[in-house]
Image: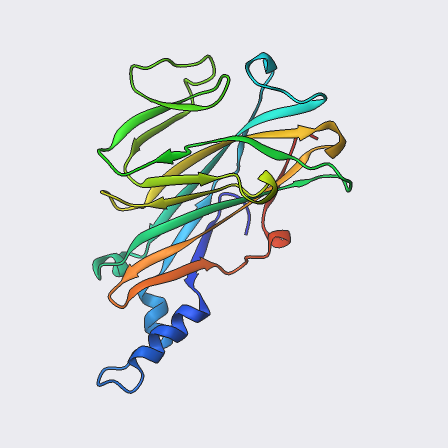
Length: 236
């Protein structure tokens, strides 16, 4: 698969085994195909949108490093028949991986990310403001020079963000609180790339849980190995 292509999310083998084992020998047993059909879903990962930061006076910049704002976009869909049967996303995780384009002791890192911590509550419209750090504010608040195009929209899932191991594996965890978690979701990160890296390679992966009549079913892409997933070179 490539950027902007629909990718199937399938129940993990462990989840299928667990459900079929619970119902094995019951008056109405469950087959592995039935479990897979109940959680049929897809995700489309948009090609990351890059914007280099030229005004480094707004941040605590490292010597000889480049900084980029990267927008990551995802679209979620659940099979129509599965939705009619009550299937819905109950949890979604976006994970990214940053790697140096060159071998050595230097590595790119996440300088900041957004959203960081949008918790349960009434849906609200927030905007991104950069300088000296990305912030979320209600409509009517201060908007930075480069914030006009970075609009999240109505937020209903609870979101928690992490910079991840070595500040190179950022992830966002979304839990729906009011609305069904389908359609488009965007996140942003600011990447710091030392000159010694000669650029950063960015890959992303999505996984989650789908609530079915048999309970939550973990789903993941068929291709989970980072080296085999689409990537984009930043700052080369």
